[in-house]
Figure 1 (cartoon, rainbow, N blue to C red):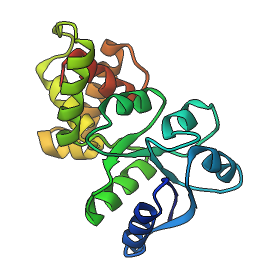
Figure 2: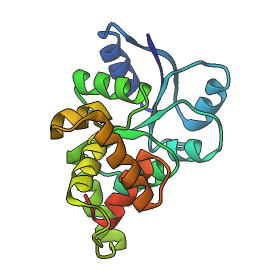
Figure 3: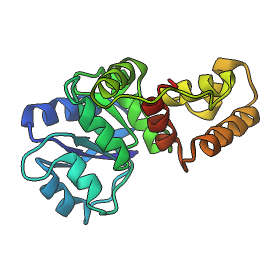
Length: 207
């Protein structure tokens, strides 16, 4: 059973998500909080596999909680299309991905399972919207030919939240080859994990 802690200041949102997850055989909400301050206290005494965390809340936002230095389980940010800049802040603070609040049960459950297993969750539709807003606000340096064409394909699939095995199947490669590509991507971008690779790739306009 995947144990989820749900943090959102809107009771109806929490009720809706809990109701959806109660329909799955392997995921349960084990605790809820209405803001980051409550969540900080709650997480100190609650064992969880995934944290579903709203971006914008009173008293202590989701991003402030991520930046607090408190040990947290893998975290998915809950957001809307209006939170592009906050999403980048959240990813820099260590979020493993993000989901829209009007997500379907299937996508929500798949996302939680992926993050619980160590994956990331950066869905293409929202990624493109986010990247466009980020570029408009800050400007992006010209994307040098840092990655090969194949590495760029792998990075794009990483941004979509696919595991190495799923990337291998999508590109008709062996899983070992994909692992080598991922290692090369991390080295070329000067980052230490997949989340930072995706974020850096978005900032550079590589994906």
